[in-house]
Length: 251
View 1 (spheres, one colour):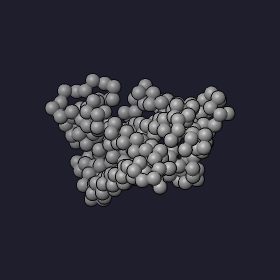
View 2: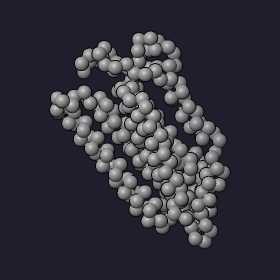
View 3: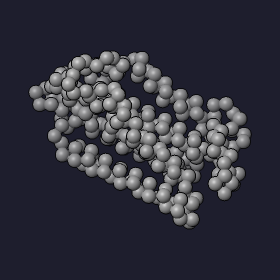
View 4: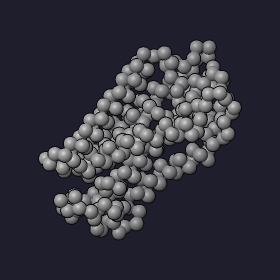
């Protein structure tokens, strides 16, 4: 199938799509969110007892462990579907959508671990302010001496929710109404996972916000590379659309 016969993507303002998340990131780096993070986390902390969700079966076993396993299962099924679309002719038309999903989900779930190791940020439950032994340091500050570097920035479990921004982009040109529902679902799922870990003392609010921003940018960037096909008219409008090099390729 030639590129000319493929459906044209709906217009998308890349200045906003990329610019707003990057602006929020800049604000988080310039205006330290420590006070907001601590204020929110104190709502979930009871002095002398710990975090209210620390020993919650629902938050740990269901919302964390089982939910993560369910997301992994869906991801594995997506990979199987993509491989099937390459091998089975009746499913060849799904190669790009499923390939996009594999790329976006793979990148969205793989960036967290290296960043955690690189930054060494501690979880709230490890800090002296919340009954732990570690000294708090802002994201861009030098870490206080410790035998156990932190592994809490950005939020990890939140990726199990926010990685599904990819659903919005894979559907926006085919099923716009369903794409909006997917976007709302992703925001809700990521928020629920984030709040659950905050109630356990595992992450600050800003940790999960960073995760959401990274996942959005990864999903959008992957969409531009793989799926986005602007019309000839919109591709010449600055800031409105993006002319991908893949738009002239043939399948």
